[in-house]
Image (tube, rainbow, N blue to C red; front, top):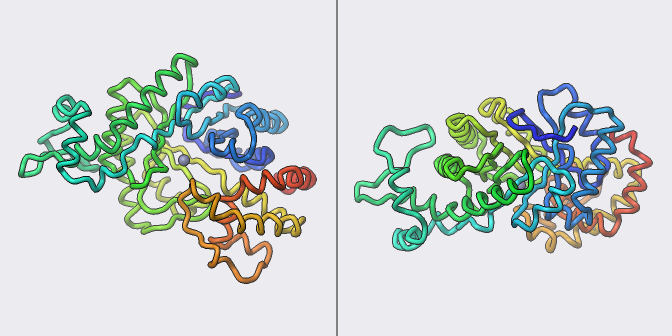
Length: 378
Ligand SMILES: [Zn+2]
């Protein structure tokens, strides 16, 4: 049944085609993870032309057919404004991911001290500095302290960077609380320009608690690059240490899970998460399911696949604008060997980012073929 999953370890399976849930059920059965079978962002719905209700209905059909009788969730992903909330509440979503990224001040990392002082003057500096500037011992995630010159630069940067985003998340929580009694609530800042340090993570969690926000998960922007549908780009040793510090913050509070977005294909990172995060874990994926569906096409409908790939190359520069991706068209493989093309970094990102264009143009054809080959997706 659809239900909030609270602190159970959980795994999100985004399904942009509305056909992949049987595969997701097969993948999660027998594991300790509670599944989110419906998970789409406002951006994804805009690109796939589906409504929150359709997304949930598609997942429900497969859940019923597979006789899945354990709890599962539906994630209204990356909600940015209060106006985004109602259609997801009406459709019965159980998990609400708030993305206050537009209220994050990315220049706080590099602002001069003078600018920072001006900016904190508009925030509740007196109250927060009394609360956070501690002289006692260091924590694993660091601490806010005054410099020898008496400046509290790190706290100023954290407040300027995340202060308004925290306020926005709190107002989204209050709005949602008026509409619904029980729900999972996630705050995600994973799509901001600069990483969230463990100390900033501590600040965000602490402020949310102080403001009475009951949240079940939090998605910082981790260091390195987490691009969609490809493995981690960055130094794994550095990430290892960083993930441990984030986990320390989470266990300090003890009432929420760490959430990894763009979790598709992060095979080198999963062991580190398992090591440090333990049970307090949520992972979101979507890109892999779409790309693996395209892999079915490479075997059975190569002509259609090549049309989608050609459209992808045409649309990539325009469609990539709302994503953080490094793939370049001139680095695509010279030969189009199928299915190994789908293992190439650049081809994967090009195909992934342009899924909306592909579904707009070839959606009906695609679905007809997948229906025919559904047994292969199970
Ligand atoms: Zn995200």
